Amino acid sequence: MTSPAPASSTTDAAVTDPSVFDPELPWQRARSVALRPEPFGALVYHFGTRKLSFLKSKTLVRVVETLADHPTATAALLACEVPEAQRPTYVRALADLARSQMIETRT
Amino acid sequence: MTAVLPSRPAVERPTGGRLIDQFEYGLDAPICLTWELTYACNLACVHCLSSSGRRDPRELSTAEAEAVIDELQRMQVFYVNVGGGEPTVRPDFWHLLDYAIGHDVGVKFSTNGVKLDKVRAAQLARTDYVDVQISLDGATAEVNDRVRGAGSFATATKALENLAEAGMKDFKVSVVVTRENAGQLDEFKALTDSYGAQLRITRLRPSGRGADVWEQLHPTMAQQKDLYSWLLANGEHVLTGDSFFHLSAFGEALPGLNLCGAGRVVCLIDPVGDVYACPFAIHEDFLAGNVRSPGGFQQVWQQSELFADLRNPQTGGACTKCQHFDSCRGGCMAAKFFTGLPLDGPDPECVQGYGESALAARDTELVTPRSHLDHSHTGPVRGQPTLLGMPAIPPAKICDESPLAGLQLG
Image (tube, rainbow over the protein chains, first blue to last red):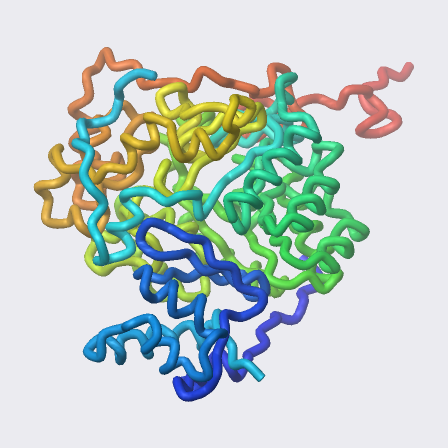
């Protein structure tokens, strides 16, 4: 066998940096991401990375869809009436989505 | 449709909980849809799951295929796995590829590499949102060509070479694990790495012509155990299409969806537009409808009785009482069906050994179900696989081999 090609593995800093999500910044659903409603919540697909993810509650779907309407992610959580006790769970879910580039900061 | 499914009382979908439990109740559109574009194939692999070879005259036209893509776009099916047959032998293959990508339907296609010359490889490397899988069932020509046919290793590796040279990213080498290649996993990994590609291994199913060779080719219990350990050690860098979930009953769950997705998150559209519960279940019992009927694919996916049945969790049967049921969920429906086992019983390759005893306990008179479809080549094929001891086909004209071949001089 001949002609091996160099393995391609580019590492994007945003993907590996765990401190990528700050709920006090303005966020939005990434532009290359589509949401498909499902009975349990939604399926999230990133056309660039071809990664598939899931939003496991309808409230989380609302949060992601309305991120762009609020000055911060925290404000979006408040507006979607996420109970105080569940907020850390939602922040973690949003952090996961940020890590996988499903949501991005707005400028 | 024949009633083959174990009784599954319709149950209301629960709210919240694990995703896998949600998936059991089905989705509004498939996550992973396989679309076989043609039954035509230049090869005659002994284990072909769709018994491909000859084109079916009823195959979807270009316009009909475009209409299916339009529908997938509306349903937000973000990508399809295209196969066959050999999809690239369809003259409109490259057009349909561009059409799908232009309509937000990404394409991952499986090929034996026959059409992937340098020009096509360069074209693919330039195209975003397309993935290529080259099928290879042996890390050496000797092992591969016995099941896929003489010369098929050379064709596949030439295609891999062309893709690598063209700078194509993230292409895959797709391997069906058999008794003959199960010992080559490290070699497959090394071969794949040498092209900068990614390894994908999947399970051999007794579907299509696979039923004829399954006894002979399915991995032994010891090989299954080794495969499981290998996947635990290498799983992160190897794709499996989540097809080895039955191995999870060895202990630790494998990464991915450990669930039969048939009719729930996956399905198959065959070349004539028939929709089956999964690519390994081309049989009338798993036929849900046709994309040509009113309401199209969406109607079939969302309304078919068969799929509604499949979207209820299994509650009865021998397996539900097994302590490993939560990890393997009873295994692969198609594997059970085509080996003549009850669908609510163990998978024929159940790693707890219940499959072997179930197979042994089958009625000696039992005739295992066969697909109503067979597009296998009827005559000999160039590069016939030798696994079944069939003779290689002689050259069509004596000059194909050597200008002097067969000549009786003097």
